[in-house]
Image 1 (cartoon, rainbow, N blue to C red):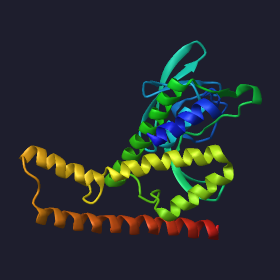
Image 2 (image 1 turned 60 degrees about the vertical axis):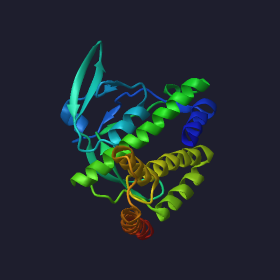
Image 3 (image 1 turned 30 degrees about the vertical axis):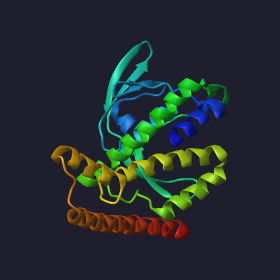
Length: 255
């Protein structure tokens, strides 16, 4: 709920800068060029979902590396469907952090008059805030699934060090970026707390479900063992993500 309110405040009070998802330039050898996209194409949908802004396109593509996508492309008076697969690329952000994301090899070089600041009414903003939270959870599940299936490494996971670094970086960009970060963290931590691991709320829900099905609670000895196992799992996960954090910080310092 807190995250929804943060996102809703941004959508309604601050507003978001938007521009049309137009292809201004194609990167040679990129997925878009290989799939037959052309300069001047307007992308109006992704996998059957209508999009109206370039940011929507970027967000969907960046989280879909290695997954085939169907783009609805308006070319002249026709709308055609183009199948392509975003390529997983490693890039550096403005702070020198290496991040991996999906790219299709298109660029948008919008002129100042092609940008629009959109502010939404409170009800629409709350709905958009809810969709933002859903997107974070859905993409987190998708990424964890890719890690579990071996399609991606887990080096994009972050622990306390990574969170602190990212929060500091967002603070440098201003209040809006920081609020976005806080909203994202609120969703991510809430999602993590619902994982079915004993000692977390998700683990307690599993115990309640067991009690509802069997008609009696799990015996205390079994619960104690489960909590110990859950504690060990959490410690192991914390060590793993901390290792990734340290490697990222080291890589950032050494260039």
